[in-house]
Amino acid sequence: MKCRKCDEKAAINMREHKLALCKGHYLEWVPEQAERSIEKYHMFTRQERVLAAVSGGKDSLSLWDILWRLGYQVDGLYIGLGIDGGVDYSNESQRLTEQFAREHSLRLHVVKVAEQYGETIPAIANRTHRGQGKPCSVCGLTKRHIMNRVARDEGYDVLVTGHNLDDEAAVLLGNTLHWASGYLVRQGPVLEADQPGLVRKAKPLCRLYERQMTAYALLRGIEYIYDECPYAVDATSIYYKELLNKLEADRPGAKLSFYLSFLQAKEAGLFAPQADEGKALLHTCTNCGQPTTAPGECAFCRMLAKIGNQKEKETGDQAIR
Ligand code: Q46
Ligand code: ZN
Ligand code: ZN
Image 1 (cartoon, helix red, strand yellow):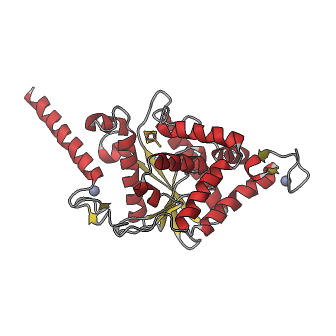
Image 2 (spheres, rainbow, N blue to C red):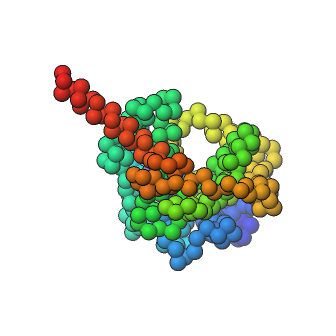
């Protein structure tokens, strides 16, 4: 099969777009698609400072690469979770992220949860008993907190993440199956900073398939961590992704159309703005200053206080012994 734009052999055939491209044209096409999303959804401009959350995986490193090539002012943020799981996941992902930053002369912020808060994510999860043995809820809460804090404290205009179309369509399917209107209202390529202390979030890869991102990373020669986080297996989102992949196999483009039609329906007013929309985070945490749903301390600070109390108790117990 030949490239649509030249006579070279095609490196990828995208049935969803009825488009086959050679390596050179594909490496141009992906950033063009990202740029189209950035402009269409008013994500950010070249005058704004962008912080990319990078995990060492293919999506986030490719996102960083693409934004840098497109000429945006983009720095990286790596959060060391302290997750081992037999594959030394955190150390390897940090090594690859730092290597990428060095090779491209890009600025990288590194925040290690254990250094900053005294314990790794799995250890905090064990202490707090959140998430029935899986550290994902503690992990999500902590990552959101750190990402917003660094973006806000370092004066970035927007925080970007490497969520791709498969991620977004899986979340959409989950939200739709539950008719989770609160989540559906907020799901989209951009989450505006509609509360003081909150930084705008954007997902420039939201219209690119996971397969396209893998192809981009491989053809661009980006070295990324192949292993998923060991806790990612068996997640419901993986099941939703498999369901959507079956649909996509029979009907190429179904995933994209599912997501884009949702965005269009939203734009057309499917979810009329509620009177209380956006007012959910009206309070400011008395400890860290980030927005929160109830007066007092935010969920993250309450979690930290809890593990602090436990540690004090442990030291006390040891002293008595
Ligand atoms: S939440 Fe859960 Fe992820 Fe954190 S513990 Fe791993 S799988 S990394 S997106
Ligand atoms: Zn070509
Ligand atoms: Zn707080």
